[in-house]
Image (cartoon, rainbow, N blue to C red; front, side, top):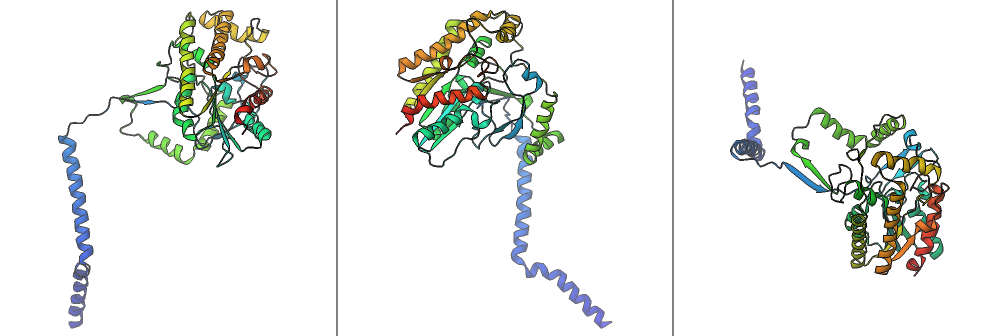
Length: 395
């Protein structure tokens, strides 16, 4: 039995000797566990003894840009095609770089000249082949004329007005050390000032300030919230393709941004609209000059004429009368008033004005609805813009 007793002694010695053989690890383990217990105890203590002041409202400035790193192929749905007469219903590629500019954009790490275009959907040119969008194509043509390396950025976003562009100018364009910034606005400014009466408004989609109430703050995320976060992180492109398919087959519900005023008779306050718009133009010019940037203004093309064609009469003119009891002639005149403001502010400040309103024919061969370029119109605009910018860009 002696060997059994000896084996038991050896086993007992092995079990009790680990702490003796590893004193440093033992001390670290004890301190670590003790620290965790202390931290958790303190957290529980402060949880029930400290008055919690949770923010009821959170506010932040909205930067209306395309999501950086976007890549998708989209097709205008049947609903979008109803009020157009010269748009090809096909797939269009939408790409953005890491700063949210529409691609193609940054071609050179060290460009000789950098040009940025600010505007709404008429600058964005969503439904134009990406190499024919005038912000990019203007840069290509200027390169051919000058032999310079030119980066040309498209910062247009559908729905943006001049107020949004001022925000983008301050937060995205100035850091690029741009040489020239070209801004084109009209219809979106007219729209927001007509419908909301101010650039500072409560419109859910276009307000410059976003307000989040406590009801919207997720403190205890549900399984759905967790799954949504995982989806956005792991399969954003697959999910976007699924959304595109839903849109293509008509599953997406149309969002009416101005449903709250539709059906009311609206009065056009020309004096207020002109004054507010011109102050934003002046602000744009002043910021650019202070920062050593050459500002350029552009009037906006359209198919608005004193005698509208049948297509404009059946679409825009009819909807203005039905939805807001506004006569086409009055609307056309205030639109032209804002284009004239662009010309006058440019002359007053010694700033170049590229007059697309006068240079682009007011026909469906170049504009597929009331305001937006098709490929032909965008290419013509690029030719006009590049020739006008040549004296500024040429060394």
